[in-house]
Length: 115
Length: 116
Image (tube, rainbow over all chains, first blue to last red; front, top):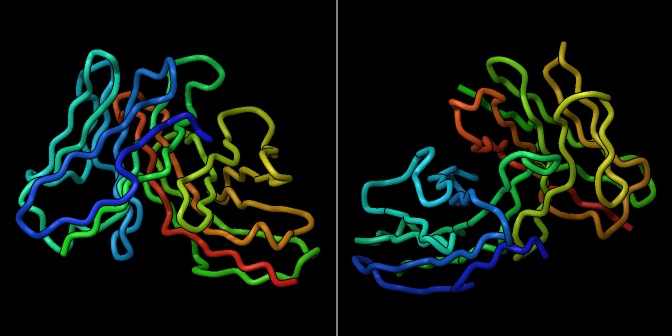
């Protein structure tokens, strides 16, 4: 168990809909990351937040948005869903500094199926 | 831009034999290098990392990896594979330059199948 918690584990929704994925980082971790894993694109970095502020942005679509709240949990919002958005979405977290400061720990992921 | 290549989609090995999963990387400057493993229907589990120091890094479950700067490689190894090592393995790189952020760039993954 990495200590990163994601909900829901599975989600099936229709095209055009909007969903929210939730993530609780490991205790004490200030950085949260979102990744998408799909068969054709592999593991793609979407976005990183550090202590509530956006720090880095990757291949995140404009239909997607994320935020990190004062209690450090994060949400990834996916809207106007398309079939191609079906994927496994990972949240990950890391602490800044220290011996473990370079290691990013991943949650179990949220399986999204768009039908 | 940083990139990672895992040249083998799948590696088959008999239980008890040595296991090697290959990884090469491209990054400006000196990298941080990582290996993760993904078991079926599970998340990514951290195995080991190279930050600095000894080129041979030891990690979880008996795995180790050797950093080779001249060949820009970071191959994962296990002296004696177990059936339970069958999984999907990912190599990842992170630029040391903080301006690049902390994001990891992953290779395409290598499926390992250990046969009894």
